[in-house]
Image (cartoon, rainbow, N blue to C red):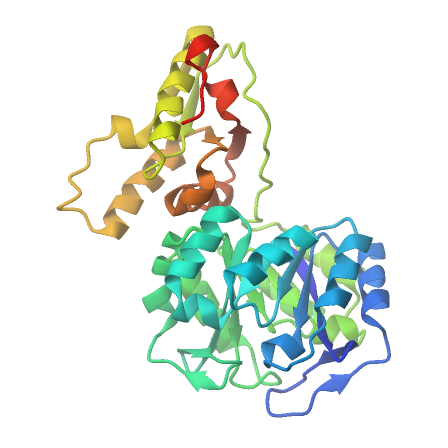
Length: 370
C-alpha cells in the first residue's frame, strides 16, 4: 500500500481542512519545508494541490509549485484547477510525474483521452462523491452520476489511476467512503487510491487489508503531526496488498532461452506502428524461438459489431493477464488512448513494460518513418 503525503497550498501557505463546512486551517510550516520534511522521512511520492487554482482565483501558486518540482527527486503529482490541455502539458514540462484532473475529467472526456494519449501513465482522475453521487466544481455541484456509471469509461480514456474522496463531512467516519472506494475499485483494473480517509495509524492498518486499494493520500493528519510519516510508511509496508507495481522501461534483451509470452501493445490509429509490430515480432522470434509473441489487433478475430466496448476491453485484459511482458513501440503512442489503457492494466497486474523505439523494431533498408 502506497502512502502519498499531500500538501495543499493557498496564497503561498500550507492549509488543510478538518471539515468541509469549516474554515481553512493555515499552518506555520512553509510548503518548501513541508516538502523537505516528507522527503527526509521517506516519502515515495507527493501530491501538491494548488487550492487557489482549484477555486478559480486570479492568482495561483503555479510558480512556487514549479520551484518545488525542481528541488526534489521523488515523483510528484500536481492537482488543482487544471482544466486545459495546455495546462496539462505545462505541468509535465515543469517536471510533474502525474497530473490530477477533477471536474474536467467528468465534463470533457475527449480532453482526457488526448491528455492520456500524450502522457501515458501520467493522468490521474480525482473522483469526489457525496451521498453516493459524483461532485464537480470544487465539490459544490452534484451530478446525476454515481461512480459506477463513470469509472469504466474513465479507464477507457487511458488514465493511470483514480483517486476517490468522499466529501460528506471530512471529520466524520470513513467506513461508508471506504466501502464505496472498494466497490468502484472492483469495476476497474487501474490503481485506485483513497483520499481523506486516514486520520490515525489504525486507519492505515485497516485500509492496508483492503485488497483492491493501492494507496492513500494523506494531508491533515501528516501536516498537523497527528501521525508521523515514518510510522505510516512502516504500517503500510507490513502487509502490501495490491501495491502499484513499478513500470520498467528498457530494450528487449536478446537470447531468451525459456518460454516467455510477450504482448505487443495495440495501435489502432497508427498504421506505421502496426507495421513495426509485425517486423518486431519477426526479429524477436528469429533470435528467441522459445518466445511467443501476441499482436492482439492482428492475431485475434473480433466481431466489432457484436462486442460492446467493455466486452472488447475484457478480451484484451484476458490476453494481458496471460502475458509475462508487455512491449510498447514508443512512436505513435501519444495518439493511442487504447494503448494507454493496456499499459495501465499491465501496471495494475504487475507486468513488466518494455519501451522500444521504431529503429529497434525494424532492420536494414526497411527501417523508415511513416
